[in-house]
Length: 133
Image (cartoon, rainbow, N blue to C red; front, side):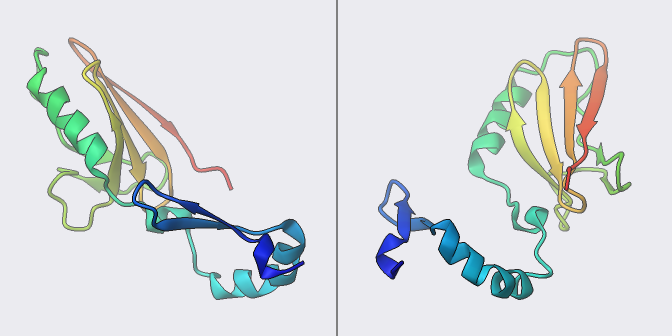
């Protein structure tokens, strides 16, 4: 096994974004890797991308429900909450999906729970899926 067996994946601008290593190489690196990233949590790397924000703006432009939009989000698993996810300097929630049909999907940065707000004509339904370890 040599370094030549490592494969790299590139984005549209030809920047490397992932390295794929064969399993035998991983087995040699696994303990070192796990020690190096012992404080790693997947949700700590979540960041807000522009795509969902553009979709959210379209969602607001199409808003014609009988109640005003409420930007508060609360995680039913860990209790983290914000009055306005858009302007909270701590960014406790990341918008990952939005559509004009009324669906907003957030990820809780604290525990990784997925929170879905389903906006209907006269109410909002809330659903969630905890992060499974």
